[in-house]
Length: 507
Ligand SMILES: C[S@@+](CC[C@H](N)C(=O)[O-])C[C@H]1O[C@@H](n2cnc3c(N)ncnc32)[C@H](O)[C@@H]1O
Image 1 (tube, rainbow, N blue to C red):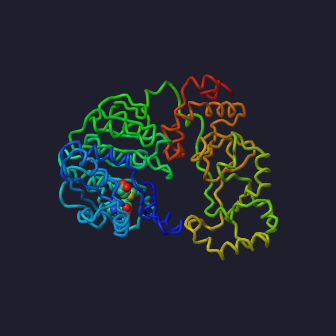
Image 2: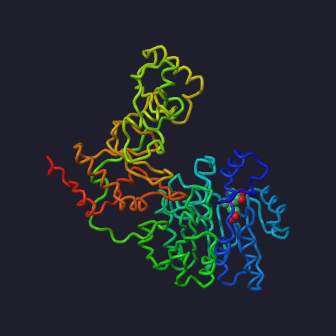
Image 3: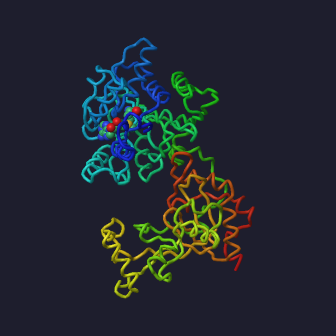
């Protein structure tokens, strides 16, 4: 998943990036590749299989381990892109004898016919919207055959790699696979992990602190899984790596995953049942303290999806230049970084507008456009010339310029920011775009809302977010509205700020 150097050389930056996204060409660094190869080579094996060879990181790791042990290993694999293999040969990352064992093809849909005892994989991280409808259908069908039901359509290609690889394991065979955390946190997570933990032994789950990410340049939270085709066990190792390039990871694996104190690697035994309930990517969730969830105090809805920010979301200079009447706009906030503190005020909006940032959202209802003032009609005609009515989101709206509506929420939640996620007081009565979630407290009493804001910004709350969010690289978290309503709020925090739990007390 990382370090695209080999793949992107000689290509303009955008083309290299596009190629990475299409093919998921990111290479596993040696310190992780060696630990993964060591796990599958724990039992004597003469063949190691990599379903997505790329520049051959696992081949090199396996051969280096085999040399150290003085036992030969035969590396075989698959790769969809022959160009990448050619390049790896030219760069000396693969040898001519390696390529003989690599079949060109799609591992998920044209898998090898024989069963395997050692599979090590860093599957392409290709999100579902980059898969053709035909391929998605074939993958969903494959999944239904394997686990007995189709999974949520948002699963990316890497999820199907995992399932396919598991079906190819011989009895006692081992899989080491590195995957983005969404595999444990996405909608489909329960279905696939339910199946895995009833059919396989999960030996270990290795996570990485943001500073130790194997793929520092990529916005994902990678996790390594060690899984064996053996009767399920009740416990598994959960480890966290705190320093990049550490030898501790490989040493731990080579010592057979025994408990040991390392400075850079911490490990613990966890029950599969608890891991499943919490999500394998997350820290263990101690028994919940007596308490509440956010949904007990507020309802959560996502911010407005405009479908074309550059057209609908403007600053005052643009509005003036276009001669558009301000009465057709509502004040709005677009990017999480546009709000630096924990409140958005009139001053925030003025400063943004002065800096040229958009804060005016064209909020038209479904009224016939001929009833609008001339300047507005001309602006909509311009949008039509630009093809806006056929854009994915706008094509579903009738008419295309009809904007989603939100009552300004008293509280906003900023997520997926580079800085910490946080709850923001909305003193400026703005509506937010999709960078935020809207929180509508169950009671509109001003003091109640202030207390709720204090509760939500308590440090424990921000820690609790990791229990319900999807984690990305560098500690960023994305939270879906329904999950935010499940954010645990301990009773002691509610007590600290005397937040009423039964509104009738305040009536
Ligand atoms: C994330 S890279 C990993 C490469 C290498 N194993 C490593 O760990 O560094 C994934 C590789 O899978 C290849 N790939 C993409 N789709 C594939 C598919 N359906 N079947 C086999 N390989 C595929 C990509 O071209 C890319 O080289």
